[in-house]
Amino acid sequence: MSAVATSPSGSASDVRLPVDFQTSDIPEIPTESLDACPVCGGDRYDLLTEGLDYELRTCRNVWRFVRCHACGHVWLNPRPAVSALKIIYPPTYYAYNYDSEVSSIAARGKEIMDAFKLRWVLKRLPRPATSYLDIGCGDGRYLKVMEKQGIPRDHLWGLELDPRPLESLAAAGYRVFCERVESADMIAERSVDVATMFHVIEHVDDPKRVVRKIASWLAPGGILAIETPNIDSLDARRFSNHYWGGYHIPRHWNLFTPSTLERLLRDGGLEPFAVQYQTGHAFWMYSFHHALRYRWNRPRLAGYFDPFKGLLPLLAGFTVLDKLRAMMGFKTSGILMLARRRDDARVAA
Image (tube, rainbow, N blue to C red):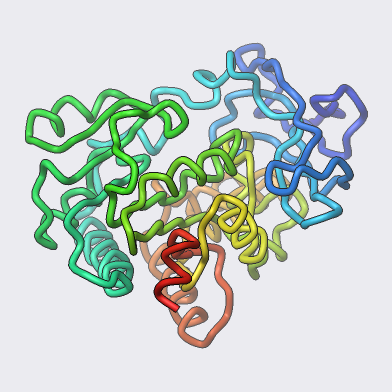
């Protein structure tokens, strides 16, 4: 059984409300509109797709992604109101489960991939890094990797909105703060050699303002490494009608292609100079999960594709698939782009 849903604006939608969402404990939450493109400011856009919170079922709203006529950027419109953020980011949200059980093999694999990624960034610096900032530092996994690269703890900075992991990190000597980029004032201008923002920019309300603030923190020759879902990817195209895992509805508010991410960085005062495509194994898994559960009504089969509870061989298989595709020059669903301040880029050239 399913019911006809309405979009956040109240108009009819072609998304059917699954039985899972037709319970009294799943609310319809307040929304707010953003009718100007967050990247270029354009006010003309078309509907790209609609969908529900297929992952966590925190609300019953049908959400719309729209695409800008002028620059092609994609954003959620309307989006959750600020008053509803604690609903869509519940305490059980996967990014907050720092102590969840992970197999030793998977944990070691993640540590190796983290180290490779950060070494690739560090090789692009004109000198050894002496300071590092991780925006969305969580339990400090990247801070600890950079410490192994020789940066002392009192030069390892982290910003995180969830206060729970920060007390132990601060007690250990890391410079961590429960702050948004926009309001952070404890980091001196031109003092950070490397800043990373891994899968955070898609969650913010004003990405251009965030990039400009980070640009002011970069030291001469410093680098911002930003990673975000790539909507111009094979899995995004195959599951574009509601179910792509990279939509992460309604927590992803901005979705980028390489070209729109480049524009965002340039408009923020930076010059992109390198790009690498990362694995999107969780997006592949969630895409199959959502389609199997909500389109084809196969919940048991869908469970095998849950990135956190499903079959490890499937997760490994999609990881290998994307690694091979990236090695052959194909775009995957994870963009890792490096940029430096434009005045530094001119000097380097």
